[in-house]
Structure formats: C-alpha cells, structure tokens
Image (cartoon, rainbow, N blue to C red):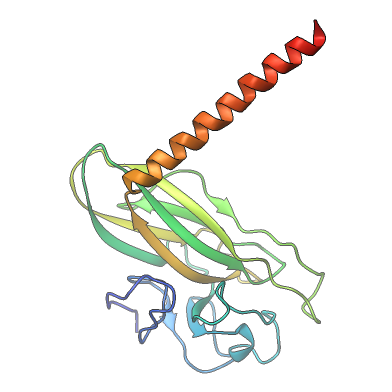
Amino acid sequence: MKLQTVLATSIGALAICGAAHAATDYTLVTAPDTIAEGDYGVATLTGTLRTDGAWGDYSAPDGVSPFEIFNAATLPGERFWYDSKTVTAGDTYRVKLVVANNYPVSAPVIQFSVDGVDTGAAQTLGGPYGTSYTGGVPGPWKTIYFTFNAATSGPVVLALIDTNTDAGGNDFSVASVSAGVPEPAAWALMMVGVFSVGSALRLARRREHAVSV
C-alpha cells in the first residue's frame, strides 16, 4: 500500500513510515532482506536491513537517528519524497536533502520538480567506493540543495525523484529533507560571504600588481 500520511521532516522524528519525508510513492517494508525495487525501509544501521552486507554498514549523520533506505523504483516518475507547500510569488525557496549512495554500481540521479515540472539540474550521487561489498564502504552522506523562484502565489507540490530506473544497484539512503525560505539572517550571511570573497580577490589582485611593478 502506498504511503499517503503526512509525516515529520526532521532527522530523528521517527514515525510509522520513517523520518525523512512528508509523503512517498515508495512502499514501506519492515522485514530485513525484502526491500525490492520501489520499496524502502527504516534503520539506524544499514546492516539491520541487509544482513548480507550488500549495503555496507553505516549510521545516520548524527550517529543515532533513524534514516530511510530506498531500493530505487524501476518505473519512471516515482517520487521518494514529496510535499505540498504554500509559496509567495517572487520568493526563492530551497530544498535541502541529506542523502547517501548505497551501492557502487549505477548511481542514483536525483531530480527536483515543482508541480511535476523538472526544476534545476539533476544531481548524480557518487562514491568513493571499493570495488565490491566484501567489506566495502558505502558512499558518504552528502547535503545537496535545490532552489526555485515562485512565479505565482499558492500551493505547489515539491518532489524529489531518482530518475535512474536501473534495477542493478541504484540504492540510496535519506536522512532528512527540509524545504523553506532561507531566513533573512542566512541571506545576510551569504551576502557577507560573497562580499568577503570579492574583497579578498580584489586585494589579491592589488598585491599581485604591486609585486609585478
């Protein structure tokens, strides 16, 4: 049965279907070693779901919180996370995804969409990896961002999809997903960072010019 319940989105807020999403097209599986394509499970260590060690053995970013493990769907368009948000025209919104690639073959390709329309470039999850999972190491946890500017005000459906439909490999874990407008302080900090980089570059050019004269 497909999940329709609205769930918490913060790390560690374990509900009946996991910690990461508001809703999903994937199917929850609770028994170890039975996560087929289009299914997902919840764990603190991947070894609790794959006793053969095929997904390595690692913990959530904070070491203790539950996270979700997806065996990516072979049908196109299956959303591993989606949520309805009310947006304001002209505002820029950001979706933050904490994710890890579980297998060294056929990496997942994550695409963000708004109301079913792909938005921004897809991001491929990489290694590093060993050549096999005999004592292999899964890919590291990564934080990736997607942004969009609201053209109109009102509710929209935000979604994350693995566009790779390969059944071989193509597995990943999700620790958290969050969406919203960056706080004014965050924007100010980013602007300070941009200004600082620009000032440093200008100073470096002046120093270079002084040395070359």
